[in-house]
Length: 357
Image 1: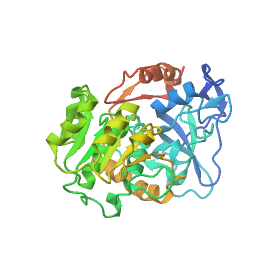
Image 2 (image 1 turned 180 degrees about the vertical axis):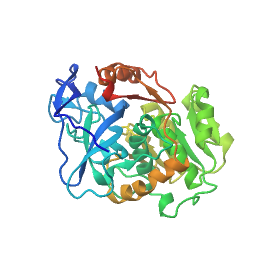
Image 3 (image 1 turned 90 degrees about the vertical axis):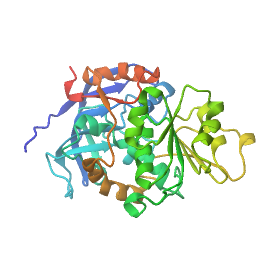
Image 4 (image 1 turned 60 degrees about the horizontal axis):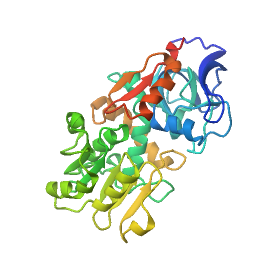
């Protein structure tokens, strides 16, 4: 399959700290040894993207390109690449390849062509669209790090991963996911099911009950109820102590509520910086702030990525529901506004960079 590669492409830049978003021309990068060039057919929008812009974090210099996950077609190979070929459909996550303190214009998702190390791209099975595939990488990375890594910066609780013999290992043990309809929460529920946890409880809007139960949740708690009642709601479902609470929302309120409902020796996993105060801590209870890049957990990701395509093809892991945001790259700012205002629930926004006017 032949793909003509242009010299330039359209890309969405942040011009200055907290500044305007501008679509303009940008050179198409060339893959180095061990890298692939991907024509980006779908790029997902994440809460991280508006936070990077609004809070002026991670970006080392401006003008800047960002965007952390995408899917598309391999159009060129660097020297030594033999695990994929030109024409393959793949999904790419920037934070599988970069330390989280970096943003790199070659690897950013908000452009029409992006670079990725060949070892960290995943072939997309035929039953998954590229729009769906773009919704997968960051959520899968973060949920898997939380549950199946340990003993390194940003690591999680260190359960035995399903691909390492841990499938069904945790039968009869309860687990709580706060925000089960979020992108990360949806994957956390699916991994919890694969690991055998039961009951699998999630705090979620009732409008998303059918979604989360289809992914593995056995019990739901209405997120509109006061968080002060969370412990009572959990105790009505199980008398066993919670050893893992996965807080996929991670506000100050959800963190302290999730921490308080933990059993002795339990661990709270957060996606955002820890806000539980020292004076609120209880000896024996842990809090871990997750960081999902492969630079932190390379061996973990080798195992995960060796199995992820099969998990997707067999339906063991399902992609997020998606909504295509119109306008190509020019539609990203409006989409991020919707994320910023909390208007997206139970699905993920993606844009199609090739449709940029």
